[in-house]
Structure formats: C-alpha cells, structure tokens
Length: 521
Ligand SMILES: *Cc1c(COP(=O)(O)O)cnc(C)c1O
Ligand code: SF4
Image (cartoon, rainbow, N blue to C red; front, side, top):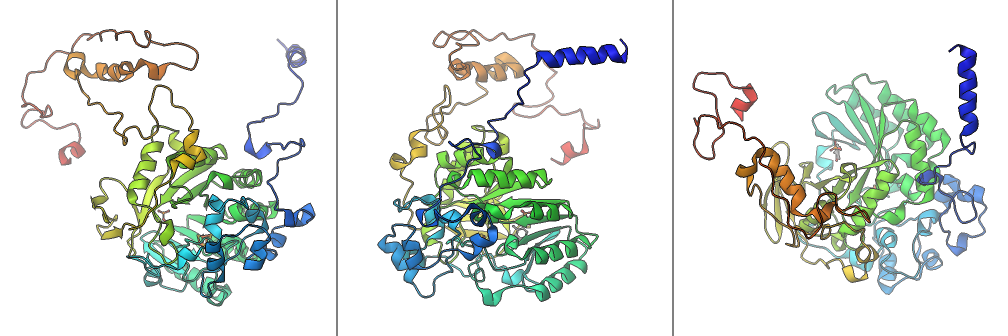
C-alpha cells in the first residue's frame, strides 16, 4: 500500500465512524446540571443574588465568611446547643465560607457538614486524657512553626489561618489566632533550618492552611524550598479545595507546577463535601501533575459508619483522589464529643479491605498522644487493647497509650441513609459480616487431599452464589446443587521426610539455604 491508499482507507473508516464527539458523562468534573450546563451546588437563599463572578471568586468567599450567631441564624435554623456554642467567649474561632455553609441542610441539626464547622456547647466540656498540644508539636519545633519529628521530613506551618475552622482541629491551640501567625520572617527561619539540615528530603506545608496565603507569599515559600537541593518533594496539606474550591484557579495550578514534584493531601470527611465544584478543582490539580490524596478524621456523628466511609472513599477514587489516612480523633480540647473508640476504626477498615478497590482503602492511624508520630492500627504496632486504653508503639519502639472515650453514642444505623441502602454484595452478608460473626471458615480444611491448588478451588466453590453475576446464572454448577468433588490432580511425590509435623522442609545439614533472609527469619 502506498501513502495515498492508506489515506483513502483511513478516510473511509472515519466516514463509517460515529462523527459525534464522545462525551464522557461519567467524569465527575464534566457533570451537567438539570439546565444542561456544568452542575453547581446549592446556594443558601441569602446569597441567591450574589453575581456568579463574585461567588466564584475565592477572595469574595474569604471576605464574606460567616461567624457570628446573628449571621449564622440567617443561614441555618440554629439549635439551643449551637447558640450556646456560638455565644461562648473563649471558643475556638468560627468562620465558614458561604460556599461551604450552603452545603448544610439548614433544618437538620445532625447534618454532617454542620457538625464540623458550627460549634456546640458540648465542645467546651473537658474529658479524660485531654491535652492542649496532644501531639507535643511545640516540643519538636527547632524553630517556630517547624515540626521535625521524623528523620527525613518536616512539617512546615506557614500560617495559622484557614478558610473555615474545623471544631476538632488538632492544632486549635494556635490555628485561627492572628496574633500567633507565621509570616515572612518565620518562613525565612524555617527555610534556614531546612537548608542547614540535609537529611530533610520531604517538606509538608501546612498550618493553618498554606493555600490561604497571599499567592505571592506562597510562591516565595515554594521557590525557597525548591532552591534547597536536598528537598526532594514538597507536599501541601490543605482543606481549601474542600471549603473553597474556587481557590483552585489556573493561576494557582500554573504556579504550583513550576515547583514539581509537588503532592497534595486534602481533607474530606463526608461524601456531601464532594461537589461538582470540588470535582472540577481536583481535576485541575491532577492535570497540573499534582497527585492528590485525602486524609479523613474519624468523627462521631459525621462518619463513624462503614457505609458512609465506603461511599466516601469510592467518591474520592472516582475523582482521582487516593485515600491516604483515616485518623483517630486526637485527644485535643474541643474534640471530646467527636471521639469514637478505636474499635470503630477497625470495623471501618474491616468493611473496606476486600470489599472495595485497594486504591480506595486508606491506612488507619492513631497519632501518638505525647508526640510519637503516626502509628498504623495494625498487629505489629498494636500492643494491647482494653475497654478504656489502647497501647501502641511507633516506628522507633516508643510506647504510647490512647485513652478511649468514656461517652460515645453509637452510630444510629436506623436513621442513616447510607446504612439503609448499602450497595449489595452478591452472595455475601454485608461489609462487616466477619465482625458480626456471620462469616468464618477455617482453611485449610481438606488441604492435604487437594494439595495447594485445591485450596484456591475450595474457596471459590464453598459458595458458588458469590460468583453469580446479576441475572446471568452460576458460572460453575448451579447454586444449591452439591459441589463437584475436587479433583486432586497428580499429587507431587512426597519428599523424604526430613522434618517433623508442622515443620518446614529444610535443606540437609551443611547445604546452603535459598536465601540468607530465609535463614534470618
Ligand atoms: C503527619 C506528619 C508528617 C508526615 O507524615 P507521613 O506519614 O509521611 O505522611 C511529618 N511530620 C509531622 C510532624 C507530621 O505530623
Ligand atoms: S483546616 Fe486543618 S488546620 Fe484548619 S481548622 Fe481544619 S483541621 Fe485545623
């Protein structure tokens, strides 16, 4: 074929193809509203007349935040408990962007977004184990605002300001307080420490929230970090895209991508926070080459439910956000009524692993009270567990205890819409069947008869209904019919037994082993 023949053939194929451009309706960043234009979230009536250019301008969102009882009263039907919280003189700062406040159902006192940002009288109550600086960050600060806890990375607090304030904030001792803010002078001292400390290869910008800084000031910090040769990656931990997705504009993305490799971790706690505006903001970040992760805080009344958490992580992955951590709520002032037992986090992890994509499964972390750093709740870190204390060890061997809450109101499944309509799992009995005692079998039953391959088969055949695709019928035999006997295959010749029952076959005395690691282990 010569070139002209190929062109003719291609033109012929093109003519046969559907000429309509393909529209991906599944992409959350391209989702359309009922009017056929890009979908938008609800706006509370008091902001109905704000022109779109203002509403979509992050500076307008920041300067029109609501914080007083009188203003909030115009947006929500406040409860007595909220009035008490809002009237308390020494409370942690309140501020909510109009965009985020509009996501709240004004008539639902248990709205999961409302609980995160509107104070209640309850938050003033002290509890056992409560600390002001529960992670002992101040003790690990070589210069103001820089926390050097791990060998190769630092936390750099560049501001104490946030776009809105979370009632359970772990850093409420400084966050929101303009008189304790960090600025150019502190940034320079922080950069100087990083310059002089070559083992630092990872810098995590946080606060407060670095994305509330004036764009020029944020860029000065980014450039300062990139001029340090040993800084490999820069990460930004931010809740701005959740409170104010308008901030993620082209200017920000163009600036950030100059300083790659840059990673970003966001902070979503509930599926209601994942709006069309957020989907478009995250789409922009990922197109700028920034891998986006998420950290969630486990909060009573907000997300202490396996079904809510499963929906959350699946919505995140749908938006190309990788769930990174679920944190146990810290022992910090103001957070008492949000605390859950550690068992709740274990139950949630049980309901995720295997039940959904591995990409959607975060790691469950207790940040060590007293400052040992993040500890995964996993067997080799979890030392012991009683009805009021969890004993854990960190990567260095440091041992810490997490005091469990004495008052925890269990999640009310009867009134939870996520529990009432869970996504079905064919042939299975729900996402925590193991914990509910409904599912448990011990393998290898019959292992010796079928040898190694039989074990896999046995798992598949124990419950053929599990593999029946909707409306198709059984793949292997029929549900309810007795299982086909497993074929043993040709059993491998029994090796001469040089080992006792329960022992691994070992090479004869004096012979080398397969690997030196095997020897060690
Ligand atoms: C969370 C945190 C980090 C980062 O920890 P990773 O587990 O690497 O995400 C670093 N320093 C401090 C002080 C932190 O709190
Ligand atoms: S965004 Fe982060 S730092 Fe700011 S109030 Fe919320 S938890 Fe605290």
